[in-house]
Length: 250
Length: 243
Ligand code: SF4
Ligand code: FES
Image (tube, rainbow over the protein chains, first blue to last red):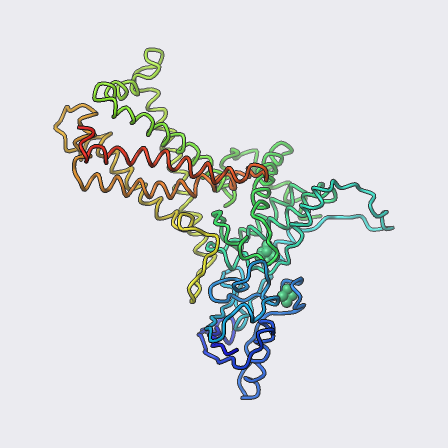
């Protein structure tokens, strides 16, 4: 198949960016979206031009490194699919594809389609962990976890931190990512000791970098892991509880 | 661990001085809580307002009696208009909180996306109502200002001085432009309610998989009842059902 790509090219963080048009010819419908970009890049290199920088690592939908705004949709048109898992059969011969980086002040553009997502690391640092004593490893399965809680925690833990939720959100809010991380630990017994500190601290850092949620649900629709906005409500509830507890213990 | 200890200290010294709601208001998430709570106050108000106004259909006497009752509520236990003014105070405070929080959060969201996408966004879940909350909010706000000037203070009311409340309403709604403004504003209110009623459950953290589908049903039902009732009044006057 043959496609026309309009790709955002930006030489560096402060350089002005613009769209460049490239023809992607002879693309197999069975190739992945990133393989298609690889091919386009090889041809660019042959012609002595700068290849298009884009983010990728595992290419199997589990690391959360990839992410492109394709025709106004984060990770492209297929639902619950990361960019690396998208295949060219999702498109038609002759399509024009517009490729843009995630756009939010929380994710500054580094180059072309590559953004700096370390703001997510700051949120994790604020509380996205549990503290465990060092020493000999505890017995596995020592702490019983109710099946429903374990399932729900696993649903939240599926978040790969790709940032599509922020990219898709009209407000540039990071509620879905933060809620997934808060809930996945907060639902499990191991996460209880730090549960209420965690939610307050992570929300605080989240709000330093990102916008505020207006419950549009666009994040859920864009998320390659289908993280539910139910987790956002759970985070909100924990946040209020935490604020009450802080006062009582103060 | 060191950072956590200091965080605890902050909370301790901070909370002893600041009231809970003020502390809550400091965070964006807390602002959303307060927007939801003030939203619930408005929901109660718009519903009561619409139901009360249905008395228009019972004729001038019933409507004027109702209007007078609003002033005499709990009289003589409370002096005249006390309850009414109390409700007004609550509504004005709620309005200030709701609007100021909305403005501040909007500013925050603009900062979070200083550069918009160049390509056309293809929204999947964000519906028209959700994306236009700010605009429908502004329209409803301007409408309320006009509505008060028209029927509460009477500054712009077309009826002659000393007319009954019923006559003032009819005089106002008989002007096609005014009736049209009422219709437009109430459609805007409808969109605001459609998203707002659903959204407040999320903001308040009220989420239970067994009941979640009821949130949308409730939002639609509430919107249809309130907006349907409100729209009927100017239409009834225009077609001569009420005169
Ligand atoms: S919640 Fe979904 S969209 Fe957001 S970072 Fe996690 S996996 Fe990506
Ligand atoms: S490259 Fe790892 S998730 Fe796409």
